[in-house]
Amino acid sequence: MNINDTHSTSTTQDSSRPQAVTGADAGEARKPCRTLRTALAAVARTVAGLLTFGAMAAPAGATTASYALSYQSLTSSSNVVMRWNPCQASIAYRVNLAQAASTSTGRAAALKDVKGAIARLSTATGIHYRYLGTTTRIPTGVDWWRNTGDAELIVAWVNQSSSAYRTSLLLRDSRGWLSGTAGWQSWRWGAFNGQPAGAAIVRGYVVLNAAQRSQYAAGFGAGRTRGELLIHELGHTVGLNHVSPTSQIMYPYMIKRSSANYASGDRAGLAKVGRPAGCISIPAWSGAPKDL
Ligand SMILES: [Zn+2]
Image (cartoon, rainbow, N blue to C red; front, side, top):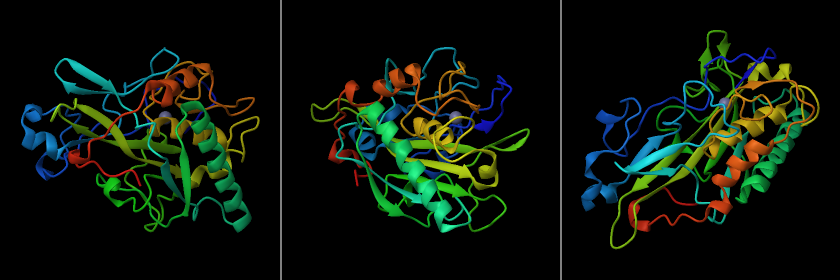
C-alpha cells in the first residue's frame, strides 16, 4: 500500500511477491508462482505438504469487484479459497514497535492502533486473535514463516536504512518503498485416509515502512491514517487482494477517508475467508506449522 491521493490506478501490488516455496526442496524455492506439483496422489508427497508464499493469485492490478480472494489449486480441477482455519482457538500475534515511534508514548499509541485494527478484522471475520506482546523479530526472507517464534502473525515497523530493522519483504514501486506490505504462508495437503485434500494459511506478516510514519495520522479518524494502513495490510494477511473501488479499504493506496473502517465489499470478502465460510480441519499428519 502506498501514499497517493490522486486515486491512481497503478498496477503496483503490495500484498506479496508471486513466488512459491516448497517445504524442503531449496532448488524449487524461487520458481515464480508455481502451483500444484504432480505428486498429490502419492501419500509420501502429500504428507510432506507443500507451502506457497502468499498471493499467487494476486492480480497485477486490482479487480473492479468489491473484494478479491486468493485461490490455490488442490488438483487440476479443484481450487480453494486461501484462508486461515477460522475456527482455530486464536491467531497469536506479536508486534515489533521499535521503529513505530520515537517515544514510548508514541509506541504505545501505535500498539493501540494495531490492537484496534485487529479488533476490526476479528469482528469482520469472526476469527479470534490473541496478543502475546512485543517482539524484536523483523519478518524477512523467503523463510520468514519459519522464524515467527511463538507468534503466527507478526506486525513490524521496519526501517530500510537500518541494517537492524531492514526487511526483504517490503516492496517498492517506481517512487520508492511502499508504506506497507503484507503476506501469508499456506500449507497444502492431499487426500489421505478418507480425509479430503485441503489448504490453509498458517502464518502471516505485516511490515510497515517507518520512514513514512509522519505522513499519516494516528488512529482511525479522518484523513490518511495509520488505522487505514493497518486494516488494509491485515486484510492481506487473511487472503484478500486489491480492488479498484476507492471506497474499499483494499484499494491499493492510502487516501484521505472520513474514517478508517472496512467497507461493505471488504466485509463481504472478510466473511468469505472467515468463520461464516466454515472450519478447515488441518490434519496433524500434514506437518503443517501448528496453531500456536
Ligand atoms: Zn495492499
